[in-house]
Image 1 (cartoon, helix red, strand yellow):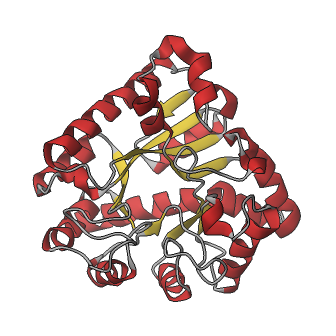
Image 2: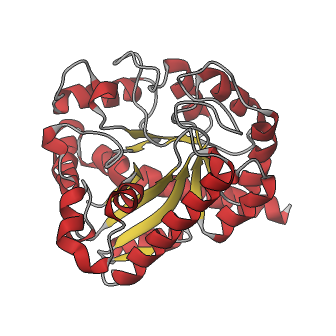
Image 3: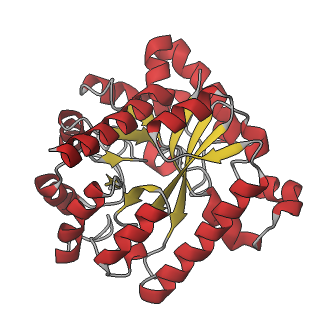
Length: 319
């Protein structure tokens, strides 16, 4: 079994914590859910640079640049453990070589600082996923704490991101924005870390209609470990999380379900902390849903999506 997780905030959490350098490995590992040394190999991880709602303009640019430099520093310092990957083929190769495949993502469209030309900055940094919003409003759209949809800039940036090979992530985007984006997007989009609202009535979770649309479009949905998105229990157990998976399966989601832990971006249930317990979760999935489906959720669906997305981009460039 391999793992491919669509969302964590580890890089941002560590950078904002102590600006730790490579010599402080033990302290750094104790501060985060995820540790390169504890994770082991055979793991693909999407590392998000997170920009809160209040970051905009030059502040957002500087935050991205400093966190990106920190990310690159950690990759260079741990070359024996991790490699940043640019393509699905590289991702699969690194995972199967029992190393960590690092995928760079950004959570917060304010990274563009209202300037469409900055899409190229993300392309150059090999950002593979952009989450349009956090919970509030930015230059592109509004999150789940608001009811406004996409801005004119948000609508205009969609084809530019798709042309640049950057996947659009609708986690945190409100329903108005979701459906507006669905009308414009030419390629599939994802919800990197969202659960089922029918199981847990939280605005961060997907409605059945949203999920069915993601199925129709060949998208991807990462299961989130945040307790508030799982149930009303303070420390929800595996059964509570499995209920979201079961519900999504009943909606036709066998081929679009993935992992979207949200490690280091939220608290997680005790049985999933620290992050290497994701291996135990994969075993529980196999016992509950069988080996084939567990492998799909743990890594295969996500990897297949990256391959499909790249193939669509190649087809477009050749047409």
